[in-house]
Length: 360
Ligand code: PHE
Image (cartoon, rainbow, N blue to C red; front, side, top):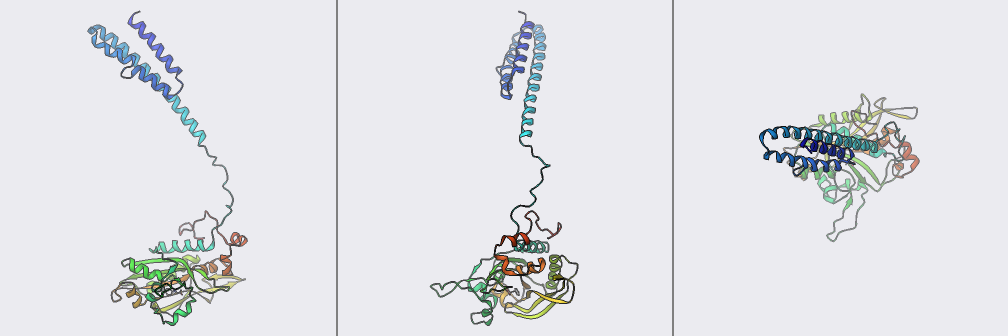
């Protein structure tokens, strides 16, 4: 058998093996047995060194041709398997994009959650971040630090839920407003401060417009130059964005809160058209929030120097503005978990409110 005949036989043998390979691993095994360090072709290549120059030239050329053919056959076979694997994967991962989404998921987003998110979006856009505080507060944060010492008459206005006395005589409370978050924020952040604090609040009170648990959103701005003009602008921007109207009239009425001086209650204008409330038109007034310039005593209780820092705060009922915006008559129904009510007033779960995409 001449060398060329044995090479031809080897070629046929290897190509036959390649074409019979059952999978990628089989192809790889053939590659190793032919072209690996100890492969048949590699060994023949190594043997070239022992040949006479003329012989080597001819044999080397023939071996290289064989090597190329086998390499090509291996890679062709390999890509057949790779393509088959890809095809199988595409089939297994196929999704039918023409399938319609479920028309309405069973649950809905509660109006409080919806409005909460709308408020966060609007104030987020105005540069406010969200702060939090505990529902169970101590006397200091809920009252004392807010300029309401133990004998202060305003404490009586709050229908507070008290916990049992502790051995030291102190009593924790369910926070009666979100204002304690003002104190917590001042004690933990350096000015300039610009936060809102949405959250649950509690008062022992129940009728059409009061529930023992309700939601407020507090806002606090503290820096060296903030003034009442900033407060009015912020509130106006908020009301226009929230009620989704081009213009809204606001009335600032002098009022009293122990933690602000001066204090203002804020009304917005509305009209009633066929039983529907319309915000931003007409000449009737609705109260929506309490506000004012933060009292120096409060700034001091927050660990800041009132001669250097000043600012404003306001507190607004989330449930209340939800009722106004979405025409919901009775506050108590908010917390009764009546499925018919939830389906009627709830929001679709995939409609996340954003300023760009629309709030409601
Ligand atoms: N905490 C007040 C309330 O619950 C609202 C308020 C907050 C008023 C901040 C002024 C400043 O009624």
